Amino acid sequence: MTNEPDCISFDDLVSAIEAKLTAAGASSAVAKVLATNCATCERDGTLSHGVFRVAGYLDSLTRGWADGTAEASVDVVGPSYIRIDGHNGFAQPALAEAGSVVDQALDDTGVAVIALRNTHHFSALWPDLEAFARDGRVAMGMIASGKLAVVPEGATRPVFSTNPFGFATPVADGDPIVFDFSTSSMSHGDLQLLRAEGREVAVGTGVDSTGADTTDPNAILDGGGIRPIGGHKGALLSFMIETLAAGLTGGAFTYEIDAEAPDGAHTFRTGQLFIVIDPERGGNDAYLGRVREFVDMLRDAGMDRQPGDRRYANRAAAAERGIPITDLIRSLFD
Ligand code: NDP
Image (cartoon, rainbow, N blue to C red; front, side):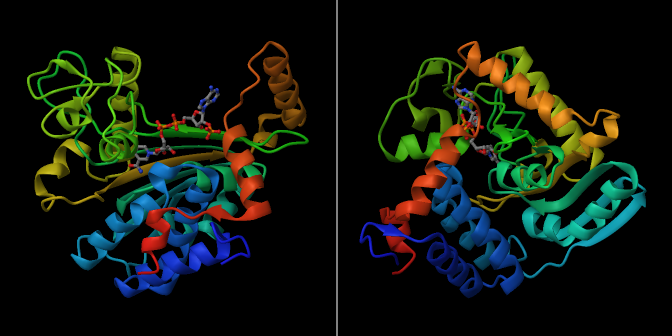
């Protein structure tokens, strides 16, 4: 703990989460990666994927639904094409295991396509994408997230997950620009948080079990569904994400796996796709500076809130005084 009684240091939070995961059966390597990811989300204010998720990880581990000791198989099937079988483990440790192979592909060819299957992804994409951008790479990622939750217009039942997509680019003289969002009107995690707080959502967020618009998170989560962002356009982005993150990787489509989930399961074994590019290979060695000028132009035009600004501000505040202790964080020490 820090001197500040209402705050915890990042390292202490990682250790506390790591201890819980290890006690639930995760190997120390897997626990380290997941705990760091979780604490990073909490520190930067992605609360829907921070400590809030620990209970779901523990549940999956103790039920044996996900294998916390799995070691991924990493196959280089082409100079730029890396296939990873997570063997029912979690995606982030599997991606970490492929780190040196990914670096080699980028050094050799300037591109790495990383196709993960048989992996549970239960977090935000941005921590891994930001890490690529801090190494000077452009990166994008997408997830077949597994919880059947999204009902596009015309469909009579959920057919997609909230299918997040993230993008990260380095920028000269500054932090990377990183955005990461679900292709649904709201992420499942945020909806659960609002439900827990007894709050309503805006009309258009989702429908009840009869297909009628509702502002009640309970009705959306229990038998209803979340709407995609932007009508048919969001639905088609979900189509692309499922196709690449599941169809291309060989992982399960969301619609295939929900039925086999044990009651109340929070994590799902699907697939994820990452595409990482060395921007210098574009024959444009001024890339970083050009993106800098582009971002400056956007701010000058009034678009002064850039993705990442909120997280970087939270991160700076946490570096000063630690991470605010919530009841969820307190419960890690019970
Ligand atoms: P948010 O609405 O929280 O954030 C969307 C992105 O837009 C963020 O990068 C945010 O930057 C940026 N942003 C927000 N407001 C503005 C603005 N006014 N101008 C410019 N940029 C802005 O996303 P979601 O709630 O949809 O998703 C939350 C997280 O949930 C994501 O990280 C996603 O990966 C994760 N998720 C994971 C799933 C899984 O199965 N693993 C499933 C679904 C979602 P900033 O960060 O600075 O606020």
